[in-house]
Image 1 (cartoon, rainbow, N blue to C red):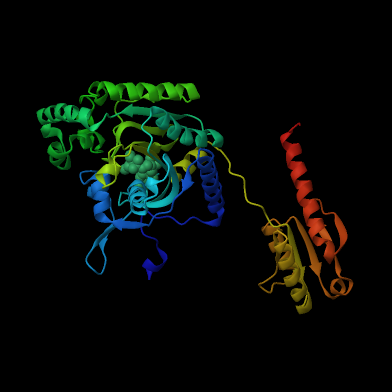
Image 2: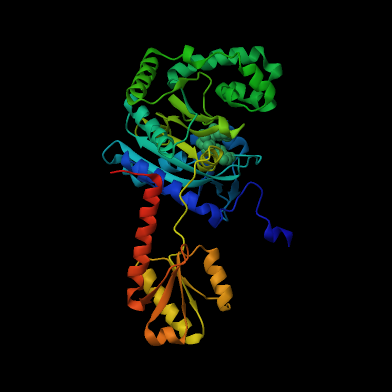
Length: 436
Ligand code: ATP
Ligand code: MG
């Protein structure tokens, strides 16, 4: 029985006291993305396991250790998506929208699943807002993608979020770098964990991302990728920096960022916060110029990022940035007797159709309990319907804030509710001392 009332570890319920914050953030990020020309795509929650093995990479932590994989009845291996890029690339190829006018600019909000040890800012089910841009090789595209994330953080008023960028070069420069890494790590092989010993031959760059302490230690003095990138990649990286500077977006170059997924090339970046403890990266992304081709498409440069929404909300919370609360009840109609209840049912429906948030009793409470409830939900206006009110088609409407009362005909209820909304709004503006 206990299992029935216990959610699996690493998952969370988002309750009404918080869901309005999610709605606000989701609207804000989609709106920001829209302003930059990114349109929403929705992809399945699970894909063929092979898709993630081939794109994210089968030597990465995400694929090796963190995926939720299961078989369908036909014995095919499926996995819950650990991220959004693989499914998006699969979709643009399968549906052919990648053949439309380029650049193709997409965004999404999705749940992701990674079988990681739950801790602050790390869950087994979490949510990402992400964008992907296909067909743009120019450095200005890198700056554009970064600017979407920057704009979102800036709009929300988040402070102390550091943008760190790096270039991990193209596959050509990476070959040289991987050789240098291999040599370095072979010299220090005793200090590597077993997984990294295996990675050494297949994908030594993954060792740089390992979270095991001894590996992290030995990684500190490993060769740096920036010393190995070719002239073209170096020039590209220079121009990304120029574009960011031109846009007034501050950044630092961090040669240690390699990102945990295999598909990246050239520019990689992270937005890092001091307010998150160990799980400090709110947003990570970069270029993946070879992925589309790897997955069977025409060679198409591409790039994007994923932003962890739980972590974003944690930063807002830590910095005391408040999200506007949703509207509270405009009018509560309390009732005495069945006839009044019927009338109230009709009136609240009519008010709701006009766009007002009206409530009446649906529990069968006493009048006193109804008024207590109206108070609890923060109703701005209230009235009581009994036989007299039904007779006169009017009721005394009470302003719950200042206690003032006015006699209102039923047909005028929408006007009175609207006037109250306007008054509240002008009070608010007065509070903020806005001058025109
Ligand atoms: P980390 O180094 O924290 O594990 P990552 O490099 O694995 O992050 P990405 O694959 O780049 O993360 O995912 C993009 C973003 O998604 C991260 O920057 C983070 O904000 C968020 N994220 C990743 N894994 C989790 C998780 N298990 N729980 C909550 N958010 C996550
Ligand atoms: Mg991770």
